[in-house]
Length: 334
Image (tube, rainbow, N blue to C red; front, side):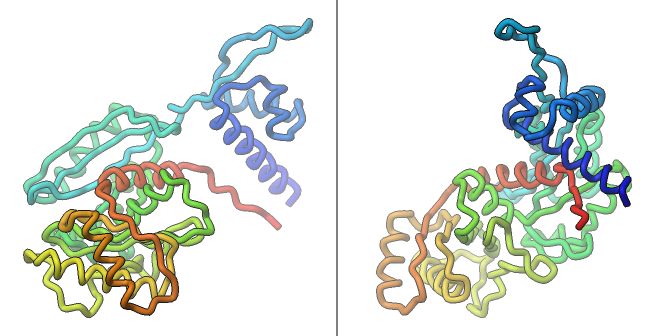
């Protein structure tokens, strides 16, 4: 037990040094000791180990006040890379965007591949050369318009994705961990990370794509609520008898969205509702929402925002979530 506790303490300390170096980028050993509250002796040992791994490297020597010059160390943000892949629809065709990022969330590569329809063999063919070109990739994140249950995509607005078990094949073929996230969950995560939403606040993201059913992401207490089998937020199942695949009168569409916001508000009472839609002009949507809510009883009145940056937030959320998966998972022993 003593050996286990000693190893755990070492992992905690080395992760402490790692996180501080990610934030400050460069530091001397005395500076690291001050920032981490560790002894200089401990920092010396951990810095040596991180340098041997390639996660830190020696940078420049800086003069000191009368003493020996101090050597600075720099964090290597390219030590681990992530491959982030997200799928979306453009003019009826599946577009696969593949992005390689480093630990600073800097984009090193970005490619777009258009597929007439989703094909698993072609999808794997996109991944293979990227991994060969970037051997430091240590994890893959995939964003999809759907949900996976036990590795199988069971719900999706894209019929060709249903029944696909892409995660198992990628992990078996390339030996890397794979994280799959729903597009709306990723978008609300991206929005909250960009807006630096306080963990005590709750945000609902509603996405209404053209000619496809809507989806919703729920951000509470600093994380996305998934529900059983990841099915929380499947608002297309609300009993509103709407054909989301057919064109809809803008006034009817807006009224249905107001009813959805009203319903969600009664259950979750969010601080903010972000609506991603392009069918009704933003100013008219908010004006008519104010008129709708004035005639209704509601527990609270959330801030309703129309946003046209779904793709941007989807991408940002996928990068953020995938990088979180690369963080060491240190289990505390009590």
